Image 1 (cartoon, rainbow, N blue to C red):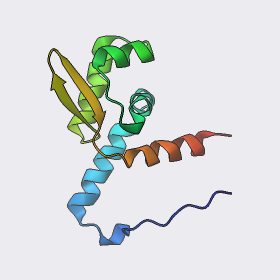
Image 2 (cartoon, rainbow, N blue to C red):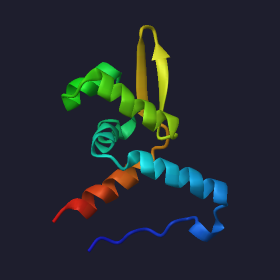
Image 3 (cartoon, rainbow, N blue to C red):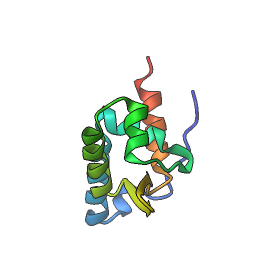
Image 4 (cartoon, helix red, strand yellow):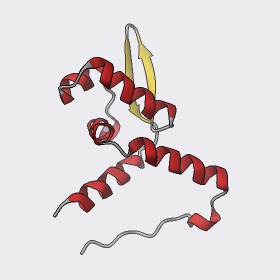
Length: 107
């Protein structure tokens, strides 16, 4: 069994507002399509709505809807370059959550 490094911050040390933000982010992530989106944005990747909808083979409007939720809840951020808007993870540590979900869902 793989050892897990201890958290630097204990939940009891977090203020209620920080816990609320964390819970809100986790709720936003808790959807199969959003997990798939996040998995494509690992390792600092930046993708457009079109690139994401092509990768996932879903409607562009559905992709935009999910991206909007993830951005609204602080999971993603975006950067406009010319005609394109690129989406990427706001916090690199979110990758750890996706890794954990992947490990927990096997078996």
